[in-house]
Length: 56
Image 1 (spheres, rainbow, N blue to C red):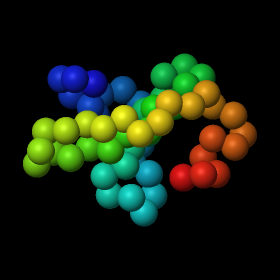
Image 2 (image 1 turned 120 degrees about the horizontal axis):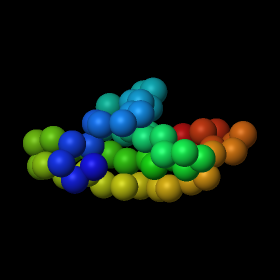
Image 3 (image 1 turned 135 degrees about the vertical axis):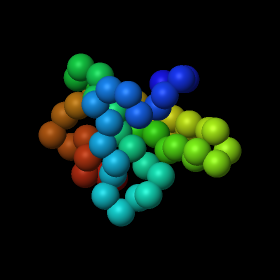
Image 4 (image 1 turned 90 degrees about the vertical axis):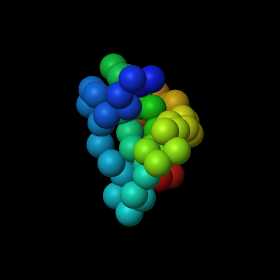
């Protein structure tokens, strides 16, 4: 992610222009990308369950 935060299984979260999710096995990384500042801010790392996306 340090070189290119958009590699891998990345999906933009609905209604949130800077928020993305990355799938890594059973885990989900939720992060924001600010390209003008060259910043990737990891917000949360959660294990995939039936309730993972209900809080987003």
